[in-house]
Length: 303
Image 1 (cartoon, rainbow, N blue to C red):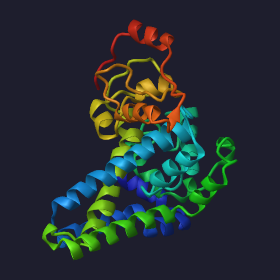
Image 2 (image 1 turned 120 degrees about the horizontal axis):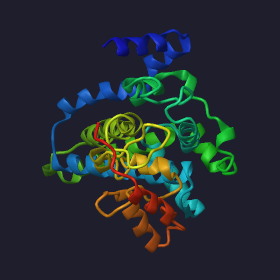
Image 3 (image 1 turned 90 degrees about the vertical axis):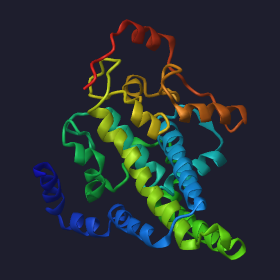
Image 4 (image 1 turned 45 degrees about the vertical axis):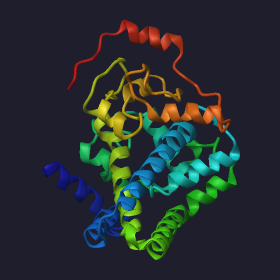
């Protein structure tokens, strides 16, 4: 509790931070989930929740992380836009902001300069506290010069609310249309909005934020990296493969993060499917030298 109060005191020291916290969509979205208790239940809502969660987690893991941040595969400009738009609908700002901060994290992982390290700061700060501070809202363009040549990415980052609003509108219209033509389904526009956007977004927040917090605290270390990155199965399960974080920090260029068949990496499996469809290509993977290194290392202790 003392650590939590310290984080909030730090955030409240600056007037801009106070204004940001008062208006933050992160806080608003959590409060808005109360509306679930007033919009009812339907299986259509559950399916909508699963779909909006899955599509956006994949857009973040494959798009924002493995593609925009690490360039671990290639794709067309059109599909790049799709990944950027769907990922931005998760209300985690745009791909340029996201990639710039993530590249900074790898450069200074678990050092004082790392903006979301649970080692240098705290678990709460790394999980969600840092996104509430205005100091980290600007885009560090010098870290993402390779992305700056795409005007459509600048547009999405500048107007990052548009993908969010487009998803909200699509959900409401879908729910209202189903209610009009198929009232027996028991759904409505506001119900799909609550389940498919508000609840889904909060769940996407916390499972992806676990990569910043949990996988630098709990898990195993296959490689003796200079940070505290760890492999964590349940985080990998929730994030479609991002939990193999120690593997990733050892070789960030790989589009595959689970090194072996038993290390579930749904994102990589889906990328392989997209590769067969011709939508992505040149997927980078761990070289043989990394597998040799893994074979020579005893499995780290579970902590």
